[in-house]
Image (cartoon, rainbow, N blue to C red; front, side, top):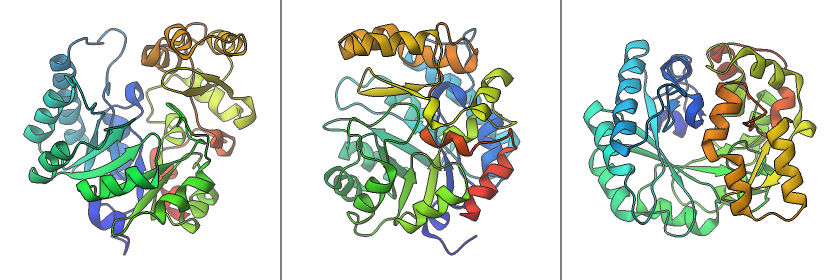
Length: 326
């Protein structure tokens, strides 16, 4: 294990954490990252497809249990599970957290969004259960960083507008947000997220004050990824200039071109509301259709701006090694 605080806290060999990626994670991908020395993370819809999609929080939690057990069969290394708590009427977190505790998962990626995202009682519950907390706010600020640190976060993720998936509402790039957040913590390490896809971008993240990288898009086009080959080929062939940006809920998304993505850009230019955009986009269902099924007429392919550095379909181990080399 390296003399690196991220590695020491998580019990891993390389300071690389794979983003949860919702529908796009499964036991094979997550175990691959962990076996390569990083930390794989199961998303809230890990292992699910259109045929196995579930509707209730209890069913979701039990599907996560299944994927946790599958992951354990593929790796003896640490891995994590994503939690997306809400300050009010949160019916999903309790059953998922119950499963996490019962299955002995030792790390949680706690995704926060909006006012009240740092829930002290939930932090306390996680800490009392001996669970390590990687806190990732969609809109990181010095204020919510300090709140999370005081509540008990072990690691902070500084996410820049360069990322894929649900984008921050503040269009502050990774180059700007990482040093801002790194200078805001008192005791705990910071990871960088957003546009990090090769050794050069990983080196830049470390130079800015990060002690590790939190990456998503670069793992979508790997051999172990469950997305179809057509989507992997599109990732390899594209660069950041190909991505289409549009407003939606909660703030922004970007996608490779496709019938739905182009429609959303047109709606945005015509002045559609974020609510209208979100309904047309289909939320995370659109991500499943576009990326897991390869249908860009009815779905979208959300990626970060660093995809131009992805030039071939590689193994997860090769990706982790390159990010670590940075």
